[in-house]
Length: 194
Image (cartoon, rainbow, N blue to C red):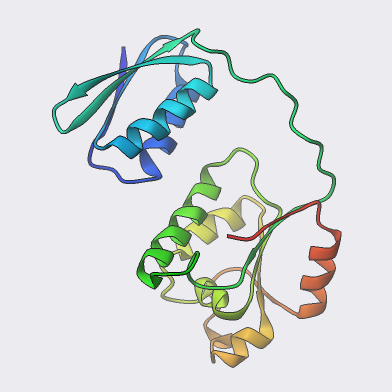
């Protein structure tokens, strides 16, 4: 039985690593070790959505999840058809409101998770304080470079870069303008705003 130890990992890593294991497995049972209830619940939902049955037992430092193929089948309902490009519009260097420290972690995890998706967005547009993420010293620079290497258009608002005195520090992607941003958004099939 293949086993994966994620007890020392925080969200979203246990789910992402479990997904990789499921995709690479030969269809046999799997064991995933997680360190907390949130990871237990998230990995269980993922496994069930992929057609695995899940049994949970306490384990040292957390929980042991046994994933058995042939459990509740994944939904066969077709996803709604979306025509047009999928764009991500990032207007801040944090995700959500409340704690900026937590918001930075959430946005970093959001971008990291985009890299792991099979179907990536077509473009990421950065405006306002979001442009800080494409510049030298950004904690997400490597993640954005991976997305760019996979063909995702990374574009930062030139006016915003000028406002923050960052135009000469762009490290990934291209500098764009509001006409380009508005045109792309108005023609998009799906807009994601973290």
